Amino acid sequence: MRSSELTEVESLAGTLRDSGGQHLFSTLVSSMSVNSVLVIGNPEASESPLVRVHSNCLTGDVFGSRRCECGPQLETAMDEIARDPAGGYLVYMAGHEGRGIGLWAKAATYILQDEGENTYQANRSLGLPDDSRDFSDAAALLHYFAGDKHIRLLTNNPKKINDLAEFGLTNVTPVKHVAGVDEANRRYLAAKADWGHRISPEDID
Image 1 (cartoon, rainbow, N blue to C red):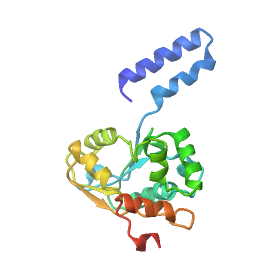
Image 2 (cartoon, rainbow, N blue to C red):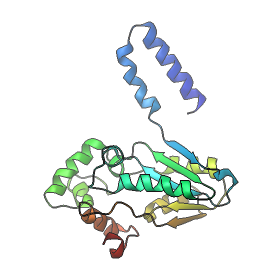
Image 3 (tube, one colour):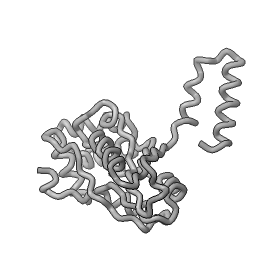
Image 4 (cartoon, rainbow, N blue to C red):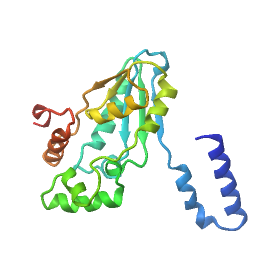
């Protein structure tokens, strides 16, 4: 959190406190909804830290939804980084729910998925983009923490690699990251594979 943001939050908190507006503290949420970095082990000493850039997924990460593999991917990433001799970084991206469309719209796509559409078809039926996530903040954070080091990135998504490259992170090697495959999400994973994710039929089976 930048010092200017901290000053803004402190000022707003003081104003609300002085005016008896404690019920308005929810206003602070927009200033505090920021991306986070979990540093695991001693990646500063590594020439090739292991990294996961993880898009937040309330339904998968918190509630354990089996429609996607997000929760298992998050847990597996933390385990793999912790087991790595040098450790690494978990970059947790706020505001990426549903590949950037938000929780409300994501819930609407679930209705269409229940009627037979896959995750991308459901987005298009609602006039929404396939993937509207912005990885510029992830790139800025990795520039800060990893500098010019080679990064091993836990991802199956070539778009993520390309997006980071656009912001100067070109020394990146993708590391396949498949986790949590079961009957409930095989169709979802197959759709991701058709869209371009590096997921093989063997991974899904």
